[in-house]
Length: 132
Image 1 (cartoon, rainbow, N blue to C red):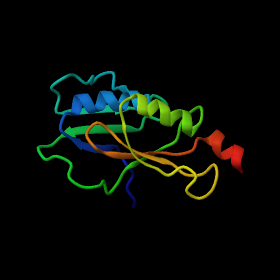
Image 2 (cartoon, helix red, strand yellow):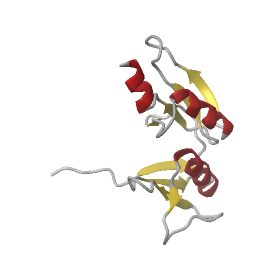
Image 3 (tube, rainbow, N blue to C red):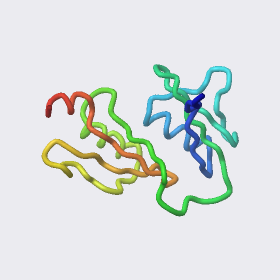
Image 4 (cartoon, helix red, strand yellow):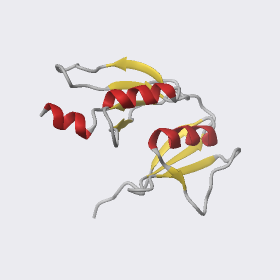
């Protein structure tokens, strides 16, 4: 017997605001029968293509250390560098630019969401194909 990942949960201070921010970043949507609204302590969003879900749950504690788990995101279209600019435009905080870490055309950029949760922007499939 084995288990599977039902959904990914993110602890946060404001579930609605953070779920709205991540919906823009990921292109996820509310679940039709369970829309997220201001004041909700739990807000779930879903990928309309894969149906992966992310649940944002309000907790009383603030984030105080580096995440032990984080999202590595790959752009659906365009390039990593295009996505980095889009993410900056959404208000993410850049923590580390590790592009070209292992040579030209490699690497990633580390960001934090509005509540400080880290995530990385990787090279797109098109970037990978162009450098292989």
